[in-house]
Length: 242
Image (cartoon, rainbow, N blue to C red):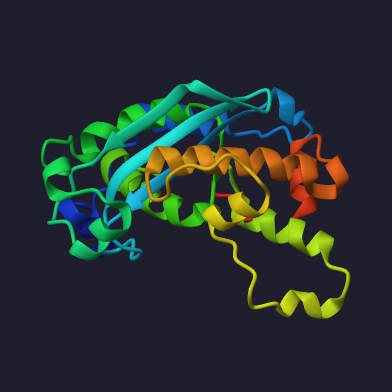
């Protein structure tokens, strides 16, 4: 007689979705990560998503933007930019933030059509984002549903990098309690004199994050960040998403 576990596995909502070949290749690419590889030899994808809200259980992706970095240089000729048609109507509050209107997404492809191409664009690159955990929560939720599993690309967070860099500049203990400090992407770009891009556009935010990442890599540890291991040692509390 079949056990309860066997009976449950036979039900449609308990069956595990087969892993898509793209994700199988993605996992294989990151089975071993060489932490001593020079950053100049690494390829990165800097990404951003525009969302209908911040709750990954209820909200949706409405835009994905990304750009590649190679040799610690921005490859403006290698970008990904795509509007996404959500399953539900766009909340007015989200449109006010990212200025994406219902008519714009009405003719867009849905995420199931777009996601495989985006995974191909990611390829075997390391992912960079500003508060990247939020983007990855939404992307991995979609990957589990559509492709059968999560992305294996390790992720680096420029928000955390900026906090580390600011901490390196503290002269007094009490400076850590300065409530006027902002880690918003646009505020950091202005503070560091970086090229400015319009906010709340996925590709523009990805480009802004790319400039911030390159700036911080050069500034952290007085410019002594050379390898992936150096980045890891600079911030042991960084979250790596596998």
